Image (cartoon, rainbow, N blue to C red; front, side, top):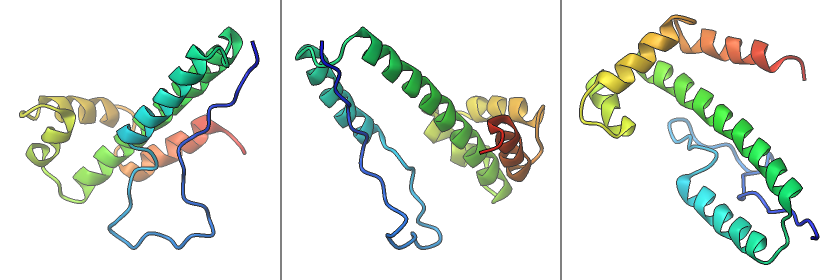
Length: 129
């Protein structure tokens, strides 16, 4: 089977103007992922993606998933530092109570005390380059 690259969602280039303060958005959305998934599924159905290509995609997605989880953790810490209450944060965890974000914060605070420390930890884990 011929391998085909499944393109990533469009992202902003460095030549585009920076977003104004306070309007930073996530680099990828659920809609972006669904659109990509539909393209990938069509390519797989058409026989354009063989097992090695799908395994490579799986590895890329696992790495991206970890990166998104790290970004989520940083944002949770930063939101608390900015004064957000657990009740304000809870709805984005999909629950109407504060146990989920509180438990996540407790786990994070075992390693770091601030969003800046978390970012530094991520830099160290990523290594040089």
